[in-house]
Structures are given as C-alpha cells and as structure tokens.
Length: 59
Image 1: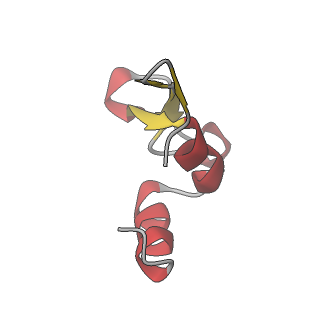
Image 2: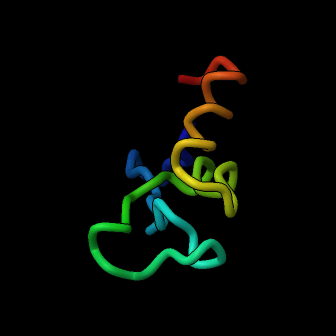
Image 3: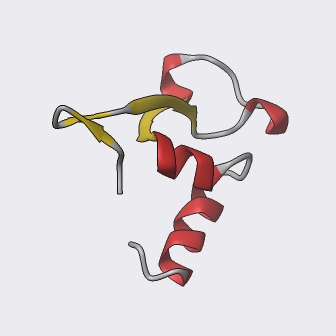
C-alpha cells in the first residue's frame, strides 16, 4: 500500500543488502520501494523481508 499524491506513488531508494550489513550504494544493490514497504523492511536483508511479507500474508 503506497501513499499517493495526485495519483503518484512515492518511492524511496532502498538497498537490498542494507549498509548496516555491509551493503553498498552500487546500482546492483539498489531498488525502488514505496515508502511504506521501505519502512517495513528496515535493516533486514531482502530474503528476510520476503519471508516477513509472506508470514504477514502480504506477498
């Protein structure tokens, strides 16, 4: 569920592997997520984030 302003979804740049876990700003590590999903992901890795979404029934 992304917030919308004038029917535009607000995206943030996220790192698949967070900097706190050794991730870099290299383009291969960057992805776009809506702000809500990025806040939900926090500092966990991509695989753990997917597992969290599945557990919550969101994916």
